[in-house]
Image (tube, rainbow, N blue to C red; front, side, top):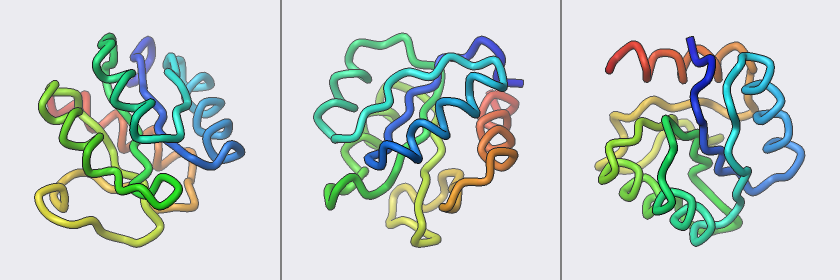
Length: 117
């Protein structure tokens, strides 16, 4: 499913980020990061080598939209993580992962990104 895939983790809460990284490792993926700020995420995207991303939509009050734009421009599939249930256009059609995370849902959403390509 996601074995061997390099997944960027963008999450500003350390405990949540650590759980996501552990879940990815348990599924055989390679977590990149985590990063908790927009500028750090943009740097990671510019460096390349990312197969997909889990993107927290609110990073300490900063919107995740600039990261979503950079990921889309780089043709990197991503899942938006939010506790708000939805996000604004043009990203409202992207896969959304509700918070708090459920590990099985995280892996399922990521696997669906690769099945679609």
